[in-house]
Length: 60
Length: 438
Image (cartoon, rainbow over all chains, first blue to last red; front, side):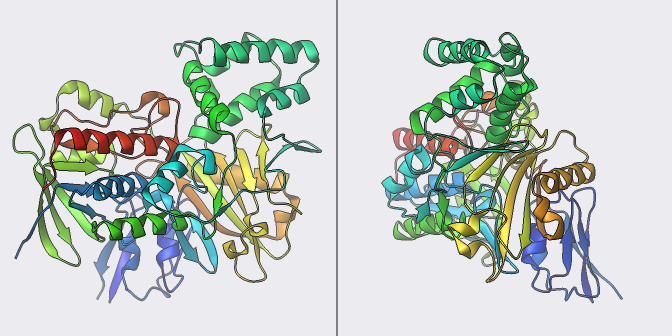
């Protein structure tokens, strides 16, 4: 299943990924955190992150 | 297969600077293409919907001077119509511990100093120096505004007011803000007035108005288009190589490249070896400013007016406003929200957020039960300003045809969207003088 990974070194805490997520699977208080149970793998958040902190990863 | 587009100008980034340049050049008959890396246009100058709340991605008002400001005037000149309201009825309140003071529409600084000074002599001493700095000669930038002010007073509330202005304009604490530039910014307020205008659906209203102008002039915008390289084989720009979600691999050939991606990213897209050491030193020394916008959501309004509230006592919380009084659209039905703007004293985001939220709750006890809707942190590659107004870069780079737009190229005395409007005008004029349209 497609999932995303948020790089804590790059994330600035801007919240844009939070606003982008149709499943409300991301929360952010200084650092974005993903609720894997809610993430549907749509990857919209990648296209909203201004600092390239979110990347796609494929899990078995 | 790579798609090739020929244009007069290609713009990298669709922040306010990119869109204004596109609109100006499009209006003048240039063939312009704008490429945006993200899935939305507007950068830190738009609004996203979240759970029924309107969340501005950065700027929260149409310029600092509203309808009197240079940005609004440029938008009007371009035919971009924006529905705005000025917060009111009193526009700005100053909150001191236990006091809620309505500020006058004009002469705010003098009024505040009169209000917080120990006596009339202190007030007159400070205001006499302020008038001299504004009307005769601004002090040297070789001292900070804090050092300048200590010559006249050590009153912490007067110092708080000077720090507030510096922080609210540029997210810079006054102990590092050059005294001369401080007064040049203050002059802008004298010229235009401090009457911020709020757009109906947030900053997105501004961007949508600009998009209509761009469409009218045939300017093409491609979102989700990552520019991989700005092509400069010798000493001049020749276009960009990009990868677009919509178009696939893309080459845009253009003699004018305007980068709204920020100076650091621009240097990366061109390659450091193309620039001289002096220019690189300027870019490397740019000092992005940090701040936090928090949005709280709750059921009943905390205030019975929508005015901006300014704080001069807290060391982080700077301003707050409850937008639903004039634009109920900012929160879902039955809900209210409070926006607050605060500056960060350190780079430790978690610690800063805790302190900022605590200050917000201290000054608004009603927030105890409120939900934190968002905490937008601006720093690093997503800052409040990519450069402080006293250390901006020029619109032109050493490479012919490569321009920089956006909030790193503000002109002295102006900041945020107002400053961007000046640099975009300057870019468009320079392009007109040097590059013929096809």
